[in-house]
Image (cartoon, rainbow, N blue to C red):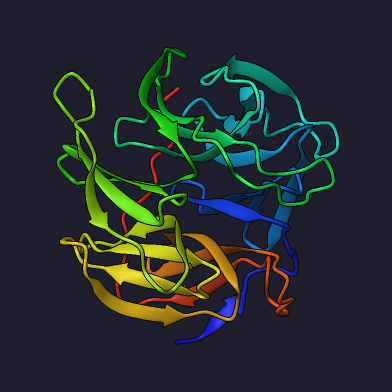
Length: 291
């Protein structure tokens, strides 16, 4: 299994990879570096954000959503990288001192956004997370916000079962991936522990393959864990980065796994790179925001 760096770009805190099937484009962010990035072919476009940005997701309307510290904004993709045109779409979490973190769209094209206590200083330095002030919110195409969970530490991983009755959701503060059943009215049932703490680092972002297995990036673990639908370790994929942060299946046949990563004190040469691996199994496609 050959891992290669997709570009020469190195992020402070790479995150949120999204593969857009119609455009054959990879979207991702550098949270601490305040950058939203898009790769089409060999061309990397970078939009400099005014705040920390945790997700960059294309919309059916032709623009994209970026989740910034102060709210969710629309980004005009035709605007220049140094002067991005941003329009406030909604404020999901008004809690002072919080920032956006994990964000993905469900099969209906609704954005699910997890927030947390801000843990990034003015110079990009790490700050300790000491409060469970985060939440999980669902944002509809008409900008209506529905709170789903409160009291979260570090929300990571958002994946859904094929029948849309379950959501897999992680809290890195607990070192645990949870499963929630989704009621017909959209309310989440109480969490069930799906995959508990593991010696290979903490749980970060994840992707789901065509067989329903979950590939979970392990912060400070230097690997991905492939987890069975019942929550058991099926495979360990060793990586040449210290802090993998998330992954997504992409490419023409959805058989390329793209992995984002962050800088680390170990200073491995590929820390902060986006890695790509050719896989023998395909993955589930990402869904654009429906608005």
